[in-house]
Length: 112
Image (cartoon, rainbow, N blue to C red):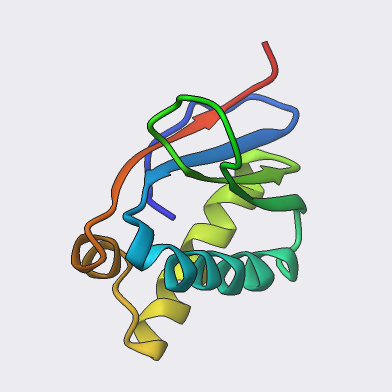
């Protein structure tokens, strides 16, 4: 989870990350995304999480993760927690995705 700045507003915040994952890296990548989201589900303010694996269509992104947060405060709190947890585990998400040959598009969203 990055520390991208989002303007303070009320209501839910969605973190949507889209990935282009090579076939050979897909099982390990999806397992890692599930592990991360299992941790996020325990954090206050996390409403729901999904790891989506493309089964059809022509889009270039074949794995998508979605996390719904209750507020921006919950996002900020979780970002610090995840950063610390990754450091304790020695997990570098940037290196992991780069080594797997994964490209991503990540951002925060609100209901339009």
